[in-house]
Image 1: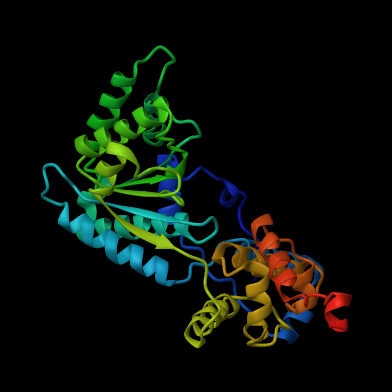
Image 2 (image 1 turned 135 degrees about the vertical axis):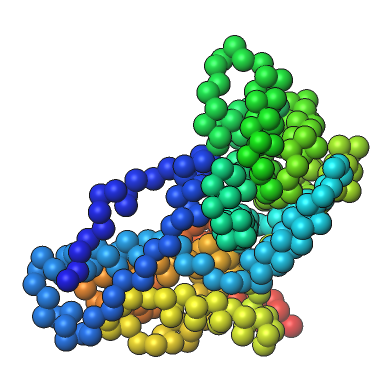
Length: 356
């Protein structure tokens, strides 16, 4: 019998809270059952609605693909955690940087999830009182106090307006040390503007936290080098402590690059739960999909999942190029598509050139 998700399943806590992070780590959504086409067509209206709701919920979730970026972040992050295990000071960290939509947040979140699951497996019941991973984001125009409050919010520590930066920072550090945190994930690091006094002081606060908290810090942000994070004395200190991993859109120029792009599409296509979708239909549209997304995995995921949802809603049960054309993606990808079209358009010859 097909049953819809419980109302409890719709509860959502931000990843930047302890409850939200635990929910993310514990979440192992099951793949919905795939009925035969005959059984699907024989469903009553009520059961078909329930069955479709399961598939809509499934396709609304991000499919995690072991891309080169994720594998690199996993390998490097795991190695740094082990290297830092007995370091008293001068711990090394990782910076994940690149364009928007290239999988930075997904990569560090999966690194954190994988690490926490490893800790639970290694320690068994002894892991119950631990907090292996903390995840925060840097707010726009961050100040040192704002950064400390983000850590406090994750931990569920109450913060009153009159409380000082030092008091909040001490409470955060003391609790994280007691809870044996091993990995600190700091996202949206490009919001640290070292050209401003507040941004420079927030950078100092982050360095201070990384010294006091015995954890491996992993930072992620958009083009952090261009944002000035490595500039000046403060930037040199950061550059001297952190390994940098670049995330890039999937290229499409060489045979090997096209092969990697098709493999990514195939992974997303294999995860579809549609009754009339022809295998490899999306792989055959690899050039079109690259043009639509400019090789960004975030844009590709949005496009394919959006088309899958539409195929269920309209009853076609298949993704075609016509379906994909109805799905809007982010503006960056749309701008890149228009640029590709302009570059392909042949230039008109001037009349005087023909005469010559």
